[in-house]
Image 1 (cartoon, rainbow, N blue to C red):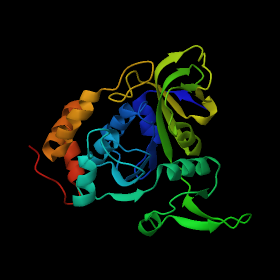
Image 2 (cartoon, one colour):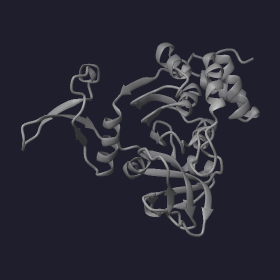
Image 3 (cartoon, rainbow, N blue to C red):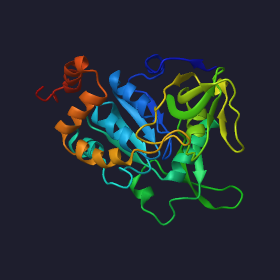
Image 4 (cartoon, rainbow, N blue to C red):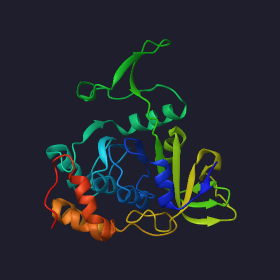
Length: 288
């Protein structure tokens, strides 16, 4: 059952080093505040999963949180590459990053299979592509009814799923509306879940076709207004397009990224210690 909690307490209780972690939200309701708290708490060795890893995973990868990324598209939407992601893959900075690439339909079906406690998902996909040659996790099965050859892909069962939503009531029932990605599926597939929300209300007053996550599928609900910025929360605030443009320059070089991280995410008093932890294992750079 959902418990109202401070975000820092929820992350400390639910996210552990080495966990499989999914921060989902498509176009809007991206849980940036939760990702930043994971960075502040110094989590390491995470296997990150996200359908469209954009700025929040670029930041978490650059901060040294990730050991693996499972994804279906990666980039700064409308701008270009994710430079911290690329630096980790090509140069192992700040830590080596293993990658597992899937398609959108693959990841969506893998979450659904995980939510159903199934070992794999079956889909009509990858036909005519080179995915099967490039990605050893993709197998094929023959339909016992039609003889059709279908793609099979492992289900995804995150240790913890984190999403952002517009509202939750005092019992911890959560309401999302607008463009939905795989937030519901990720939460249902996960062992533990955290939801950050814009506001706490007495009654959800859910509109037709809205998505409701009942309190019994959520572990922690955290009141975090503006918790999706610089993405947007439909009905609350718009996307900060200027920041997405600025991120290209901020993230392009390690020093400019670390300066941004120090000023906007990490507490100044913790920054030197953070760099020492990041540098353990022989990869430390000079602290300036």
